[in-house]
Length: 451
Image (tube, rainbow, N blue to C red):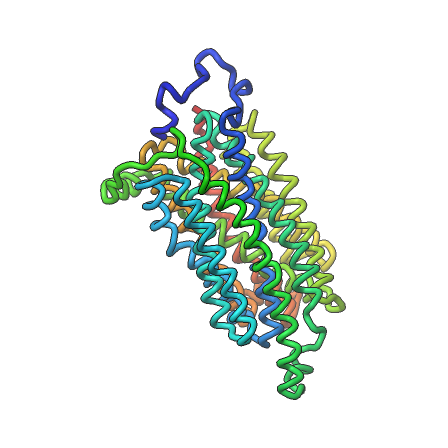
C-alpha cells in the first residue's frame, strides 16, 4: 500500500526488528483506532439485530422463509450497491469523509423504522433497511482499509483481525438486545392463531411487536451521532488523504490480480455462509427442539457468537507464529466437519456442531480481506470496495438457503430424517459448499509466507 511505503511513515526498520516487536497499532494512532473499533462494534451489533428480524418478521407478517429473508436481500444487497460509491469518496477525498457519509446514512435509515412501524408496512421497513445498510457498507469500505493503513504492513493482517475481534463483541450485544427487546416481545400466538384473530386484535399485536423492533435501531442513533461528531471535528492525517481516481486503470489492475479476484470470490461465499448459518440457526434449533420459543432458541445463537469471539481472539494470537492462510485452511477443514455433523448427527450433537460452525468462521472475513488487499498499493481503497461488494453473498445465499428449506431441495441426502427436519438439516449443505471455496482459497495461499 502506498501509504505504508513512505519513509516518513515508518518508524521501524524491518530488517533489524523482529516481527513480534512491531506494534500492531502505533501510539500516535490509538485514539483514531479506538473510534474505528467502535464502528466495527456498531455494525456487528446491527448485523446481528438484522439476522433476528427474519424470524421476527416471519411471525409478525406470517411470511414464508423466502419472503422474510428479503430483509437480508435488502440489507446485503445495499452493501453491493454502496461499496463503489464509498470507494470513490475515500479515494477522492479521505477516509474521514467516508465515515461521515456512512454514519449519516445509518441515522437516516434508522429514522425510517418509525413510519414503517406506524403504518405496519413491510416494504417501508425494507427501504429503511436498504438505506441503513448502505451506511454500514460505506463504513466497512472505509474502516477496513483505514485500519490496515494505521501501522506497519507486516502487522496489517494481525491489525485487521484485532479490529475485527471487536465486531463480534458488537454482535453479541446485538444478540442480547434482540433477545431481550425484540424476540421476547413477540406475541406467542402461532400462525394458525393469528389467522383466526379479528383484524383489530391482530393489528394491536403487530403494533406492539413493531414498536419493539424500532427501539434498538432508533436508540443507536445517539451512539452513531457521537462517533460522527468525533470524526467531524477530527483533522485528516498523512494516513487519511485523497488523490486522483484513475478508476478505469485501477479496475484493470485489480482484475489482473488473481489473488485479489479469488479473494473477492472467497469473501462472497464466506459472507453468504455466515449470514445464512446465523439467519437460519434459530429455525434449525426450533425444528430439532419443538418445545422452544424464539427467545429461548436464540440462546444457542448467543453461544455461537461467544465461541466466534473467543476463536477470533485466539486466532489473532496464533497468527504471530502461523501464516494466516494456513491457519484458515486448517480451521476451515474443521468447520466442514462440524457442518456435516449438524446435518447428520442426532439432535443434541447436531446443535452442538451448529454452534461450532461459528468458531470455524471466526477468522475468515478479516483473513481473506487482509490476504486479498496485501500489496495492492494505490489500489487498496478500490480493492476494499470490491471485497465489501462481495458481501452481496449474504443477499443471495441466504434466500437460496431459505428456498432449500421451503422446498426440501437436499432432503434426499439425509433419508434418515423426514419432512421439515430433513429440509432444515440438509439446507446446511449450502454453507458446506461455501466452506469448500474458502478452503480452496486458503490452500492457494498456503505457501506464501508473511513478507
